[in-house]
Length: 384
Ligand code: HEC
Ligand SMILES: [Cu+2]
Image (cartoon, rainbow, N blue to C red; front, side, top):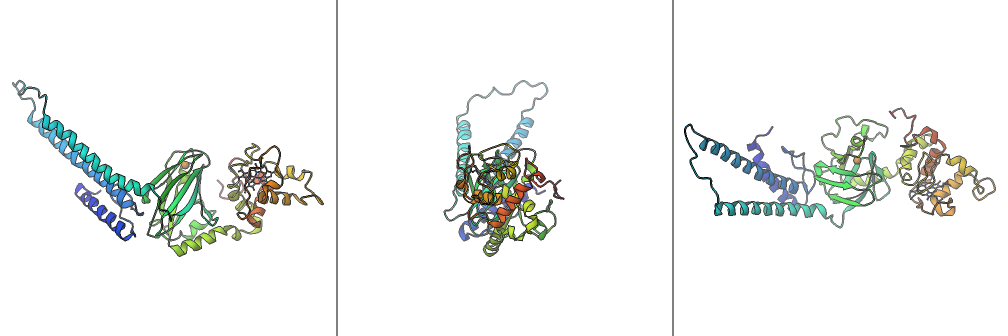
């Protein structure tokens, strides 16, 4: 544990780091301090400086007050045979002005230091790279401009990144301690957060990329990647919302993003329905359920049998097969609007390719194999 004297240089170091970052525009991660994990974003030095300044004001007052208190206790202690030595004091104008003015000045100082980083933190630069974040019991979905999706967060280094946050259910809160950013994720409203990290962490190790891996193990990148947490208790699975942030240099990030957009291409045809199905269903779950409860759209429970019985489905009819009908429902939802629902389904044309649609149809055909509440595959070896 560092002593008070070791802590002293932190404030100076942070001030230097803040100034350097402001000048060069490129910030190396700042080292771990007694209170804070390493600071890896461009705003980290400012946040840390604010904290150090406030802390040191507190240490100083603590020392002065405790020292005076001990001194007075000794000096004015009751001695044997002695009556009160002095009158009770009543009024002291210089003292009273002093203890009003001094704290006011200090608080104004804290405000100035704090407000400057506050402005940095709240206004995203115009050229920021947008990533959509959906919080849901109990996980995160990060969506990139090219349609790629991930469960850990991947960001490009050296440019501002803006996260557009929304929740599918309850209050969550996204916190990346190393970046010194935290924002509530509120159902029914968008919130925003931005940061810039100039220091790439690299891609996770092979184990981490295995989508079936239950645990994240291996020392490959543990020292580099940044932790990401939900910091709003959101139910029993709250702790499952701990993930990682990987910062990639621009080329690697571009490659990663295009590869990620094609994740489904690597899945063999016969494994599609259980490997891709639950993941794709996350795009439908706001409106469709698996358990028979109708929402904005009809539940998928029993959907195949229901659809097969439609009068316009069958050989020689408008839709030759039920697969045809479902495919059209996904690409051109208005082609047939199921009564009594509104034509409220967005088209997934350009977002779901043939393979993804096959995966979804396979999913609907095998609904008995999935948990009707969570949509998770029940036969998966790693399911429990
Ligand atoms: C914003 C809400 C919404 C989302 C998201 C949504 N749907 Fe729908 N869906 C509806 C509504 C409303 C209907 C009924 C009206 C209609 O037929 O267009 C419907 C109908 C359907 C039908 C026809 C069901 C039947 O019983 O005939 C299928 C199939 C379907 N959706 C598939 C999907 C798939 C697959 C996804 C995700 C990739 C999805 N939907 C996402 C709202 C939604
Ligand atoms: Cu949460």
